[in-house]
Length: 214
Image (cartoon, rainbow, N blue to C red):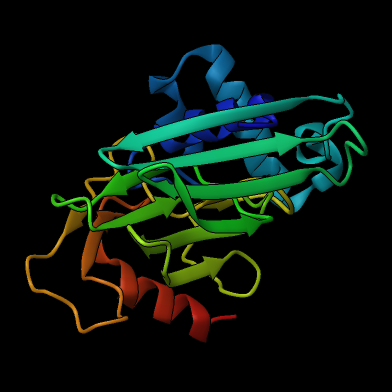
């Protein structure tokens, strides 16, 4: 994925325990390495003082990359291309079923993907604001059942900066679970996960709540 410098900062911040607030940040950071702590503290300060957070500006390097996630017959490819314009890169998400392209989205990217036990549905999650996709659920045939974006929805962020960092779920231990009840046709399955405060939440509920706060 692109902007590795800021991704590493986000991962540092995700390691802070669920009791993190700005008042307790200095105490919590003592469990991190000094390098990681300084990066995370800078990101936290950037929420109030953007000028102090240079990592929250678009990278200037011209580069391209691709990552692949494979789940049985389904493969998910994410690509990033800033060769034309580093300030306006191309993000693409493609989903293949048995080699056939079944879904293609622009301006979409996620930290990771999690399959249902039967590989019939998949969820992607992201703590990054660039691109602004926060969560997606789609089935093996490429039908998008849920898509939420930072900005159009307001999650209960534990930490955020103006552009890149939108920390709402626990990327280190997401504990994604697909509920056993079969959803109605065309509806997203029930999915629970661990939020950035350490609580187990229902994805549909948290997205609905985020939409109400926009």
